[in-house]
Image (tube, rainbow, N blue to C red; front, side, top):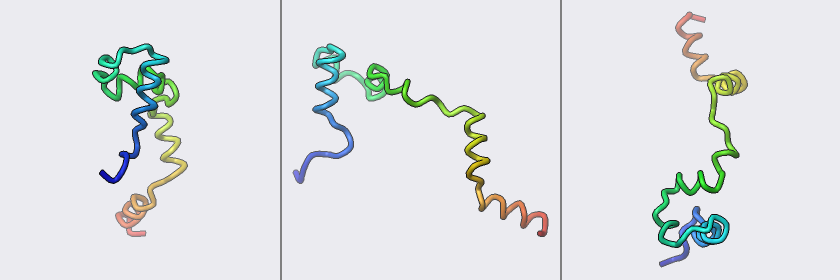
Length: 76
């Protein structure tokens, strides 16, 4: 094995699960990643994308390729 897999800090997550959440090891390993995120409060940090926010982003970052297609359809 060349090395540790990147991306998920399993030792750190296990430490938080056992110490801060006071989970038993078996209970920790039964959790799905989504359940663990919810228990750690990660969902509270990033609000869901609303239609209003999507429209703000679309206005701020227009799709140039789409605009060209509309212009081509009009013959301009």
